[in-house]
Image 1 (cartoon, rainbow, N blue to C red):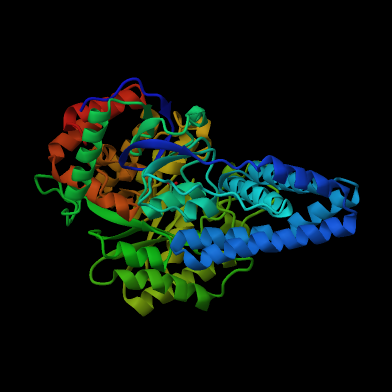
Image 2 (spheres, rainbow, N blue to C red):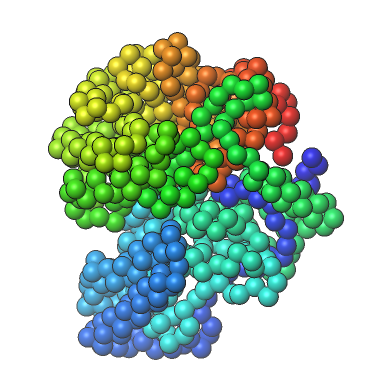
Length: 562
Ligand code: PEP
Ligand code: MG
């Protein structure tokens, strides 16, 4: 395949797919008259200023709630969360103290929002991503105060590539997939709300493409959501040809029905990553042999208090029930902390939460939390009859694995651990002596191997699972699995990369778990190559000096994936 030169912008790939069309930029500025009206509010006395703020906050919150009512799935959740944040008492009291100390109303709004943006950004991870939501709330509050329409995405007159600084959730949720060919943002990580919603809508998406705002409206661009690249003014005929070939290739994938096998019939289980009963129900209709990662903490992101065992049982049964008939579900116990703050579990005030008390480590000070969750998982397994495996996140020592396995087996379930910390990869052979299976979380394994925050847009060259050091650790764990005869899977994003998936299989990885949308592309690539070729690809990747060389070496062995 010929790649148009030069590559103009690079970002983080989020949703694969090619698109070619004119740029339409999202602008958020108020017009000059509205700015004048806003400035006039500076003269209000504190009581009137607070009344005006309350009215604006209520209107903004209602606007989000109205959009939530017409949206579905992740989009509705994001909008509901923003509706709550707009009315947050903490934000209001930060406003009030600024107004009372004599700050003009617009300045007080911006100051209070900036205070929380800083706070969330310092917390890192998912909380940092909420900074975008706060900035959107600020823009909407100021527009309401200025008696101007709330900002939003212009409706494209022709199908366009939407380019924004960091699309607000309310805007992303309202996108019309027929008019938005692709989505490119200058900021945001792979787990930003823009990314979550783009995945749901299936719109090709690249985030963190620094400098992309310099593009002018109407410039024609080719976006490749699979590699995270954008070319400006490419040869139109060549760009259209690539888009058509991509559509054809994606249509052909629809015919892949599973199960995961190499061309010579070696089985590699393809499994789905799910977050709740809805995503499990949808994944159950895809050609997967079960669930390789049920992220239970995502069921409770908005919860202030710990759900009862009965309530948890219902939630877990909703997922397990979707996968009866010979398929299994791997339930991961709460991975609270760091980028996944759960109000009732996360330890607060840590200096460095990613290296703090997260995942299984929470059970040390709060053993009941894990016991109750295991009781609920066991009850859900009994209720549904589903083959249920349970694994713990963030395991670093054999002792942790041993204690956990005892607790899980006492409830008649299969026990495993995640390999997300380099110590666990290095000790995989001993871990497999005390557990029934392992699952490699390449997202965290990469973060901890490379000492690079997985959410940092400027460290994506390090947070790349193709990094040779990460591949070496995966190979150590896979080899331990081969020797023990116990399953060792991969459930991080690396499993969704068709070329890497083949190299992982060649290392001895027995299952690959990924977003259900990625399963057909991985399954069809696996089905096109033999296990011997996968083994050769693994060797080639492990011998490379950097991610680009590893990709090129694997492509050289397996042939182009596209
Ligand atoms: C991982 O770390 O690779 C993983 C699967 O867990 P999460 O992405 O939920 O941290
Ligand atoms: Mg992880």
